[in-house]
Length: 244
Image 1: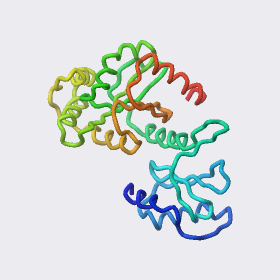
Image 2: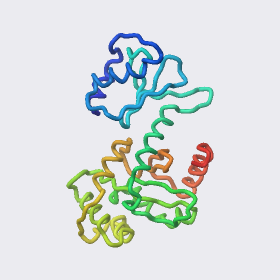
Image 3: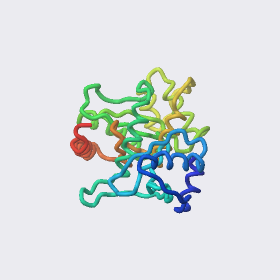
């Protein structure tokens, strides 16, 4: 579907047609179904812009004219409120995907009563990932609990992927992660593991590098952020989202 969507986005002009307000969503969905077969996760909603509908296909957020004639891609920002409407929509997508995760499949550092919980897509061979892990006690002391998800940048079959499988299959995941982050290979182990699923999830949510941080509310924080700055940023996000 990703390839098909890229082809569609190369042309803004779609089929011509008109409809009543009650028929618009259905017409848009029908046209998308014809152009993107197998798109079974489609959500259509109004936007604050007259004549423009938001279209979500899986993890992609796009826009279409009400009559279904024009399809376009890009960020929509309300200049009066400075709110990025596209990012808000993507946050909802990420939140839904995060809510569906099995939390027992994380490698977690920190106390259960922490004020903030952060998901971190990580690669133990990434320099900034190691720097972040070295400061784990500081994050935890500042009330931030870190939940690692696997993102082996070299992909399936790489040594990093093999090491991450060993981490997730270890009896002591935290200890195995400590070894991997220190540049040492954890004890080899195999099991039914979520490493590739988490890697693919990260890709679908727009993760392109590590570390990549996300809140459980769906906000994304790319790159390494030192402990005190991360705490400040999380406090601001929580306030902006009404404590989400």
